[in-house]
Image (spheres, rainbow, N blue to C red):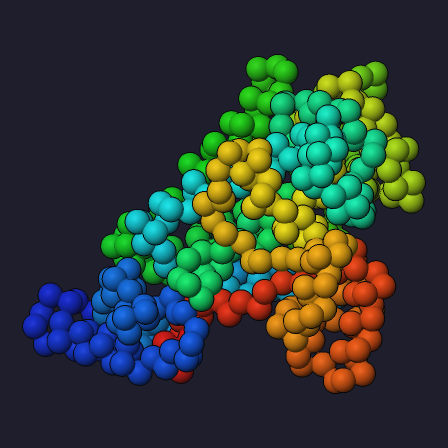
Length: 457
């Protein structure tokens, strides 16, 4: 599924001198016409003003295709996504949308890619250790390394989880990070995803669609395969259970979920059961799935429900999505839930301001990948810093997508607000600082898209 296959039928042979010159001219023209945005790093054109080597290799192969053939292949990819029903729904949507696949991939060469996994692994280990402490001995809070209010202010901090040792040994079975290239040319972490990270299923579809549409390019670029990751993930979930042939279910909220397509794709690809809360029942110290042959034990649940929804007895009593009594089974070690309920507390932006110092304290080393500088306004020193340079910061909600008091879900730039709104924001931060963070305004890199027969940033 992940590897290249077949041969491109529309590519012009590049071995003939005249054809080779045309291909070279076309690739060179794309680079010379590319209008990189001033002062912003770009994935295609490096700091020296020249195309990055990995993009040169891509452009040479891409330019061998006739323009009409390129358009035909892109149209074929879009048609496949529609026919396969690859969809998503944003939080504000009532209807599903077709998955918007950008036709040109983001290319990262092997040497640069090799620098990313160690930093992501380090960050995942740090967050795992922090979760163990938050819901365990609480030494980080007791010592003042982590303010209690920064943790307890999050709705994802679940007191029923305190004292539970996760069945399987870990709070985080899967971790994701949003990353971007910062103005210094390095990759930066923009946010952490510890609740129930999305994206794996869509990555599979992206790879399948483009590897079919441009199989010769995938073959020539020696693209990193996805299958080993999924095999390792599946094996890790199996190993977390307490019997050799575990039954694993992917717990979904159902068809009205924003990413239900991905839930179904992952369950099918990994060989898991796709289950909803009503499909499950607690019996004794175990969770079971209802079948026509009776109850069958489930050993591992890959959770795609929000933590608060998984058990109406101990968490949100209004939830109709979870399984009554599930938390008690987890407490007794009768089922592995991945990720553990309560893991989403680490997605709070309030904690970003403390992760660098926590890394030195917990791991004894600096973070390998930096994140956006963040000031949690629940501390007086940080609040004063933000208020003194308000126009230089992007203001975000400390615990959610929205900025409290403002309608938009994204960051608020004080410098772009009318005077009255800027003053309202200043007063809100001064009075309820714990609900806000100030973040450094970072201009992230642009990457090429294919538009009107040209590469544009």
